[in-house]
Image (cartoon, rainbow, N blue to C red; front, top):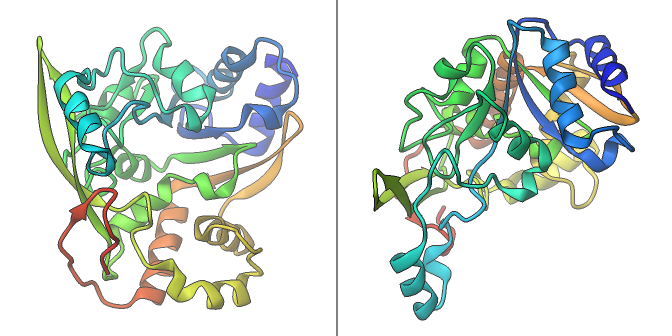
Length: 292
């Protein structure tokens, strides 16, 4: 798989030149790519053109989200000597694949300030996209995901499984439904030469913002959800079934391209239809027992 062929495949799939594109990639699904993750980023930039912007969910490989679950001695060590989150140097989460880290280290790339929910971006809209990432409710209003929707951007699943659709966390955050599971956690930030610990509050993106077990049988019956399949994948497949997004092959990988606005609206309504009126709940410590 070469850069020129991958760029052509992405254009045929429907990437909009000059647009804003969020990408999720599973490199192993693409076959042998000449130049690896660098080629993937260059092909994305080729397909978008000079006026386009590419973004990816990065996070932080060494975050302290589960600090409360560590043994006491470990917690003391972490609190004493963990380096604070630094947008310039902190590594992207490895489980998100090789492309977010490749974008993070690309010349001119920018990163939003939130230590757990940050995104990396490259292109003309990067400054606007990463600016003022909310400390609390970082997947909600004012977040980079909200801006992706506002800009009528697209979401590309380049060989990546549908259950990794980060945009659906934005739908969880904005849906008028509940009760929502919420968490509180502490993370260190590098401010100048000092490390400052800060508390953050968010929907629970680890165990799920909603108790999806309550609707598992209904979802399985109406979507044909396979055993072990995540609800996010079921939502995405239902969106595709009603014409929101399209599927195709890029390289040798089954891939999907979604309109961010349409997918977000569909997912919001999906959640509201199953979880009723909105009910606020108090946040729990991250990694602790799940609250309803």
